[in-house]
Image (cartoon, rainbow, N blue to C red):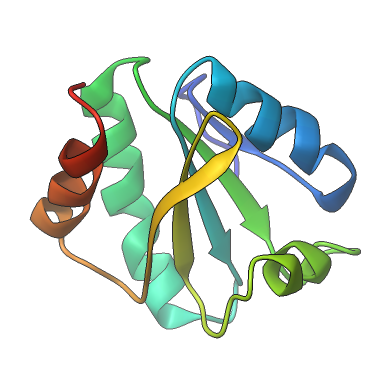
Length: 117
């Protein structure tokens, strides 16, 4: 996945702490745990990209492909039971999460519940 939006980036097990946890002290980070074989993951991706674009730099999207290298350890560490799972981080802590493909309004409501972005 190559995104042209600088607020959307890939992360990996080795860089998760820097990319997600440390970044979440600067601005909220949505973590998208996905797999290329997962149809709901593929349906959710453009919705998340649109949301990030609309937030225009106030929110970041970190994408982690769980089947690459040691990335599944991130899913295990976060008690992920299915894909896609999206976790909202701020100040190094999980604030909210959802699993499955959700509509844009659901995701926006979740974000607005925690942040006045």
